[in-house]
Image (cartoon, rainbow, N blue to C red; front, side, top):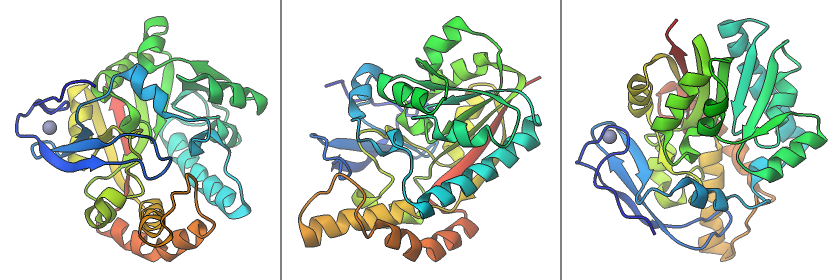
Length: 304
Ligand SMILES: [Zn+2]
């Protein structure tokens, strides 16, 4: 096991303190437990000790939900509506044409859908073979590697880098953003999403939070820590928006029921999961209004 750090990996403050101790993987049942620390200076949460990349890649079993296209009419429709909103955002930033790299694209379902909304040249990036192979089956081109390995081969190539729920999976997001900067053309954008540690759902559910996703989530950002992360890498923060998210509540409730009532871990979404998603929708919309929802969207810009 790696050694615990005494410094915040984002702002180097020494005032970091434990937030959750011995938290476990309630989603897939990975063996082990993890401590989450919090930095009161820049407001970021992170696993301590921080894993190294090669070890962290072992945490993605083939049954990992992001490696499977969404099933069920409702989930598919919701996903399409979500991506349509993203397509509008991308079009507003770079227009109808341009090169887009989607980091951590999974099997490339998002690339497939987004390509239908614009003339963008889209390519994915994944460090693991399984999703690359699956992506090929649906005709999506996915490069194998990481931002660092790609930045060593290519420079200033992309108009926009998409990072939907990726930052939290990276053992060193600060240096990865440096590589993203190198891969972007001047004036290029990063559009991303990540979980919000200062959400009501985390504050209430804590170890049961559906977006904790240990050990796969390594960092837990907030509006302030995202701004600092951008600033440290010479990006300008253009936008930070709070997004409605019911997964933190729904999955958290499933975990709670599994542990306290059914006493059995499922390692997948329960049959009643879609019902929980619907139940928590009004609350999550309220949270969004109060800027305390489970997910934040960010847009960073590289200088011209
Ligand atoms: Zn910090």
